[in-house]
Image (cartoon, rainbow, N blue to C red; front, top):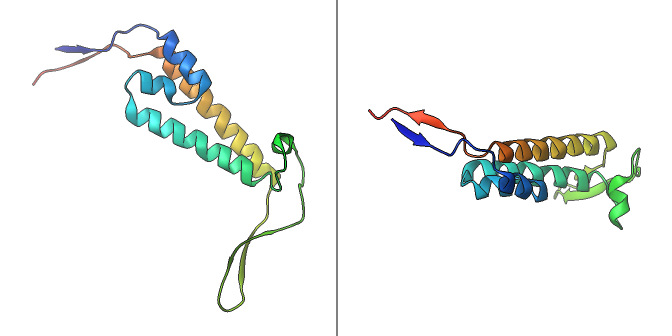
Length: 122
């Protein structure tokens, strides 16, 4: 049997995860989990940002309700058709929920540290 991990809590990893989701996992050398947490947090921030359009200052990210009736042109096709994006406030809410969930999961997982488990040699 091979023992892996310390089985102890890691306050350093927890504090790093408080700063940015994934940093604590990177500290614990859980590279794949760190990448997934950072990517999920980045996607949440992107969802929040695009559904806050137009963004002129930081307080625009906290604005609720219908932001504007304006649609933003994404792509113009050769035949004259257009692909447009309209910000929706409840998508922004889902982005905040995703960011909070990712952040909490990263902090709790960082606190758990490297858990002790046994692997059979075979």
